[in-house]
Amino acid sequence: MWDALLDLAAGSVCVVCTRPGRALCRRCHRALPGAGAPARPTPCPPGLVPVHATGDYDGALRALVLAHKEHAVHGLAVPLGDLLAVAVTAALRAEVGRAWPYPPSPAGPVVLVPVPSHPRVVRERGHDPLLRLTRRAATALRRDGVPVSVARPLLVVGRPRDQAGLTAQERAANLAGRFAARAGPGPGDPGAVVLVDDVLTTGWTLRSAQAALEQRGWAPVAGATVAATRRHRRQVVPPAPGVPDLGVLLPRSPPGH
Image 1 (cartoon, rainbow, N blue to C red):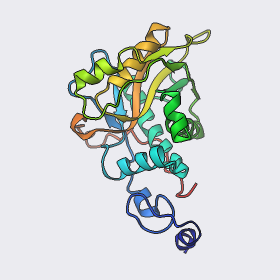
Image 2: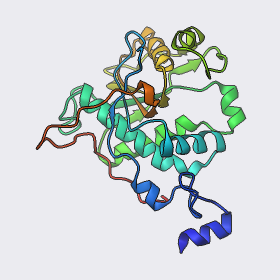
Image 3: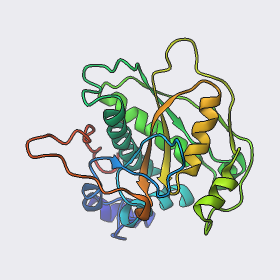
């Protein structure tokens, strides 16, 4: 009933199944991934931190990312941000320790660093999609008692040409020197630094951002994305019988919140 009233008032439909109502219907929300898994580009940029994603950049995940990013469907920041939080959790449990975050990790608080878009792109879109997702992911993690903050030390110092159709080598050259870090981490241990982005393709965007951070004293331990291009994802061996799936930490938010 609520979905029908929403469609009547706003004319909205689910971006996944086109059912009239909210931007993500209950059925499609329930079908979203509930765990993160390793994602590794092939070929992989040398030195790239381990990256986790929640699924292939296809189907529902692709529809959600594009609708939020390119069409400013802001309500989708909640489910997408929660998915990013799941990927962050999986990455940290793999790289910091399987007991993370209970008890608290000796690596200290978690610091999420989003890969920035060029300011002109942000102005053209009218919003900063990844920053919105990162802040929502931080909220979701804090809800479960995880000490987490969002830092924005990265600057875009060059605008590369469109990446569509470029080979991995061409993307690497295109992104070389794209980012710089405005400052190093503050006094004390900055904690477990995780680079976040919406989609992993060749890995060169994350690797370029990682290099800029490392030059200023940051030490990312992992990367996390909502999705990864299918041909670059590594098959994940399921846990052995009797071993709980540690990738699931966050309960899904109620649809429409």
